[in-house]
Structures are given as C-alpha cells and as structure tokens.
Amino acid sequence: MMKQNNDRFYNDYDCLNCKLIKKYNIKLMHNIEKYMYIKENNNKPKYLKEDKVVSFIDQISNIDLGEKIEIIKEKGMEGLV
Image (cartoon, rainbow, N blue to C red; front, side):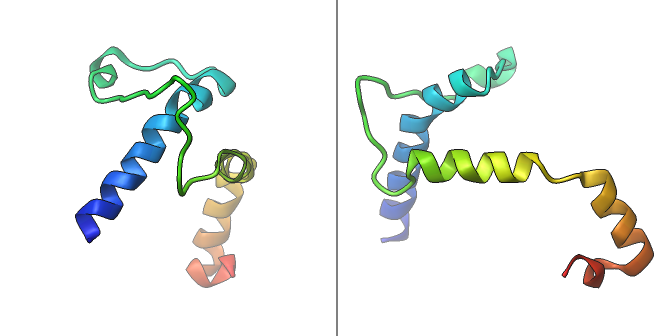
C-alpha cells in the first residue's frame, strides 16, 4: 500500500512540475533535468491541489530565514514557537 501511495504522489508531482516551473520561472540545472518528469496534456493531480501547493510555496517563500536563525541563536528552537 505504501508503494502505491508513493507512486500516486510522484504522479501528482509530475503533473504539477510544468506549471510550477513556468509560474516561478525556474531554471533547471542540466545535471538534474534527467530526473525531472513532466506530465502535460491536462493531467490533473489527484492528491496535491495546485492552489494549495502554490499557497504553500508563497507562504514559505516569505519567511525571513535570517530572522529565524537569529531567534534560534538567542532562544533556541523554543523561540520559534
């Protein structure tokens, strides 16, 4: 069952890759291109919803990592709570 679920998630990633690469203007490094799988032709992900993935990426992209590092230095991981 676990293998089957992993395959389904990989299928979802393959369906979203093209849209996300275009949306965020991602330049793939030559040495990883051979590991990227892209499914076009209106393939839809089953589990990962595009709007939720984009929202997650946008939220994570707005985190100031420098600020978080300083908090951890001063207060430890407990400071992030």
